[in-house]
Length: 256
Ligand code: COA
Image 1: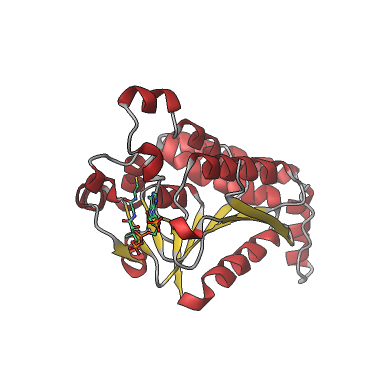
Image 2: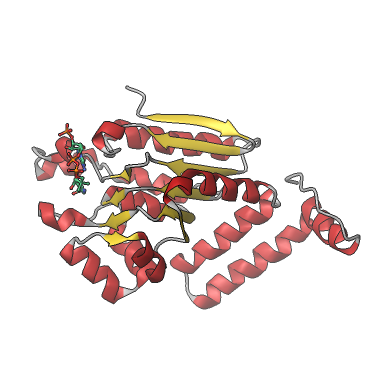
């Protein structure tokens, strides 16, 4: 299998760079397999506290690889189950930050929505253009988009296939922050380094609690939150965090 991504660990940040720039990082089977396996490897590595997924300056990812699907029959697509593996991203417990510059289209937008915090360059162009190919999003796009931006906007994007700017995406709540073009990667990395200074168990609990809002009722979600909140009182990092506040110093979290 060709190397479709690059990975490295920089000061507790597990960095995954999509590496098919000449194809605008179109998400072929090998690339997505490597992304998912890298996320799982970083999730299991106690030296890694959060992950960063980046594309290139021109494209985060311009969607699923159309060449891989163009001639497929319905039965082949059924057996291939190309999006089945994406469910594994949902099981990643550490925070994932997306650094988005240029195109984030189709599967690229869906991958972006699987991440927890999205830093978008002012150059970002985001959309679900599948309708223009005679299909619809298949990696959770219809479901995640409506939860992120509401029905009216999700319908607009999915039925017209139009691309939106970073500022429009920010106004909709689809990305977390918009940054100047030349700083898209540095700002995302800086955010990851900031996350690495937090208590790792609290980061994971925060992610878990927020995500439970998507899966459960308000009452159940609040129960999940309460249990996670109390659970954190079993960690050394809670003791350290509160003691450091009282002693007027910066806490040093160790991940226990
Ligand atoms: N799948 C496969 N290849 C893709 C791709 C995709 N989703 N998106 C871009 N590419 C390839 C192009 O085929 C081209 O390859 P080539 O140089 O071998 O011909 C290369 O990436 C550059 O793309 P190109 O179309 O020449 O760039 P552009 O600047 O003119 O247009 C886009 C950029 C993003 C508007 C255009 O590439 C596009 O519409 N891509 C498809 C987006 C899409 O429908 N995604 C959903 C897929 S389900």
